[in-house]
Every structure is written in C-alpha cells, then in structure tokens.
Amino acid sequence: MLDTSINASLLPITVFATILLFITKEIVDVLKTLKADRLRISLIKNLLAVGIEDNTGVLREVKRLAVIHDENYSFRIGESTFPKGITVEEKCGTQWALWLVVRQLDTTIFKKVLFELPILDKGLFEAAKKAYQGIAEVQHIQNSWLRYIHEDNYRGPEYEGFTSYATRELDIAYMNLSDLYKKCTHKDLNSLMFERSYL
Image (cartoon, rainbow, N blue to C red; front, side, top):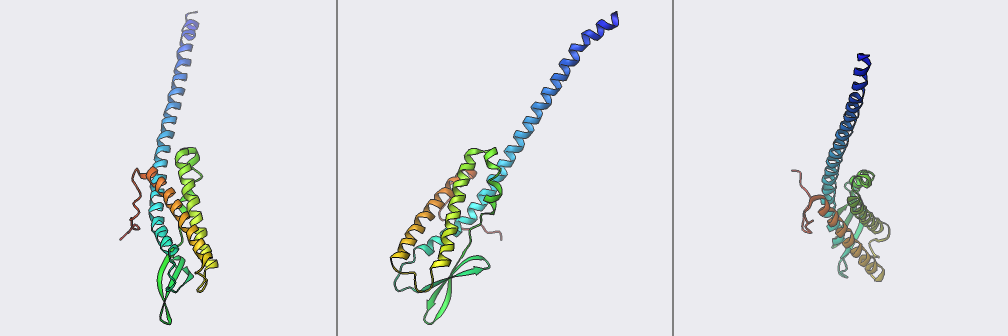
C-alpha cells in the first residue's frame, strides 16, 4: 500500500517535469529560429547593399546616355557581349571610336532573396520589390535602346520623348534603390558613389 501511494505522489511530479522540459525545449527552439532569422536578414541586407552599390554605377552611365541631345553629335549604339550591355560609339571624322560601355544591370541578388523576404521582413520585402521593379524598367530602357535607336534615328521628337521617359524612370529607380539601401545599411546612397573596387 505504501508503494502505490509513493507512485501516485511521483506521477504529478514526473508529468510536471515532462511538461516543463517540453516548454523549455520549445522556447529554446523559438529563440534559435529568431536568431537564425535575424542572421539571415542581416546577410540578405548585406547582399542587397552590394547589389545596389554595383548597380548605382550602371544607372549613372545609363543616365549619361539618356541626356544626349546635341545636334552636332554623332553616335551609334550597339550590343556588347563582354561585358553584357550597350556600347556607344562616337563619330570622330570618318571613324567610330568607343565612347561608353554601359553594363547590363545585375538582378541576380534580387531574384535570389525576394522569395525569402516576405516571411522574414515585410517592410524590407516591399522596398526590395520596388527597387527590383525599377531595375527591371531600366533594363527595358536599355533593351529599347538596342532595338530601336540606331545611328541615324536618335534625333527628333520621338527620341526626345523616349529620353524624357528614360530619365524619369531612372530617377524613380535611383530613388527606390536609395530607399532600399537606407533600410539595408542605415546610410544614404551617395549619388556620387563610384562602383566598388576589389583591387
């Protein structure tokens, strides 16, 4: 009889200890997940910041291309395979000389992280989505230059309308990239920033 009373009194203690261990394990798992998510968000912010810094130089070059209106200036636009993008050649007498190479914007980082962000940080996702849409629009502008602007048809109202549209979209893309950069680094994206050098 004494044996059953001991077992009966130990039963609530073992149940309580099991419940306590389960709750402790769940709390530890939640804390580990939160820490891993914070680390993942920090890594994504760093990757996005590097992508923004690299693309800022390209935006600057595309904007240089968008403001060519001089009637005395002869240029032609072609496609560059390495680096992938646009070449701009200037007419010097009877010869053509390379004036500018505008790389294609790089969206690789955006494509890789956009799927994770809605779960991790909705505010950062919205900013990244706007920045990605701006970059996609600038890529459309670059592709339009390659398709429609040739040696002799870059003057006139159609071209001026296109460059006006391009300049407006470039400003919007830069503003969205700046907002995202601020969210990622807590710093302003300097418009005079040069591309990162790894030398």
